[in-house]
Length: 280
Ligand code: ZN
Image (cartoon, rainbow, N blue to C red; front, side, top):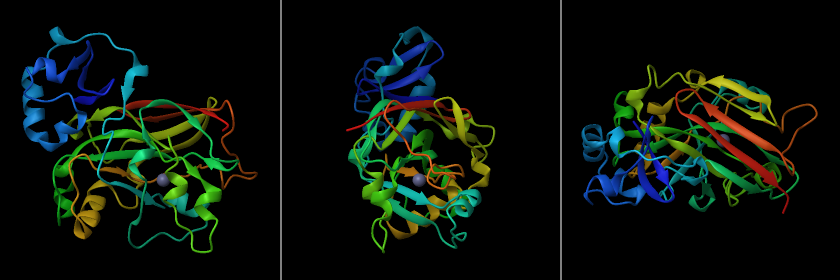
């Protein structure tokens, strides 16, 4: 099932078009995309029965918003692919490297992003949305707590990220528009293997990153286990799971985003998001 946010309204996307959940459910489920995560099992059970092509209407992709537009918590995972650890000249971490991306940085999948400086970089990432309260969840049950998967970019101002001797990553990855995601959430049951999805991104049509989530050092269930061991995960929470090799900062010479650039990020079985950049 593909679930998302169309002009701020909770929507199920079918091959025939968009189905407005509040209208078709007669108000049982509200139009607020967040409301679905609060009762995910009931919502998906209803949607599986009630959503039909007869209620679907055409829509414009420009009207898609973030599948989880106002999460309570947004986690980022650093250095979670071996190739990215190597290019960043970092050793493979023993435990997940966790930071936060502040929720005001979230936007929908098709957006214009104002660059915060001359050293802004891309990071194609699989993004997880949490589907139910999770606390001390063992990894074997991690997928049970996932509402679905979407495509994200962890856009990163490398100057801001690394400017202190003790780097802190959160602010440099939280400028407005630096956490685009979408185009919708795809439920885990839709994938032959949700732990093995091709992902990548292209800058102005040139491929920059290409990998598969099977290369994640800490895959999705391990991240649910690690995070929920420390704090409660809440419905609608978002996890950016880390980026594979091919970022701009470690290229020789480095490549950074500039005015007029177009960045397309894709994940197998989910779709693509597209960002256009401009100077402040
Ligand atoms: Zn990242």
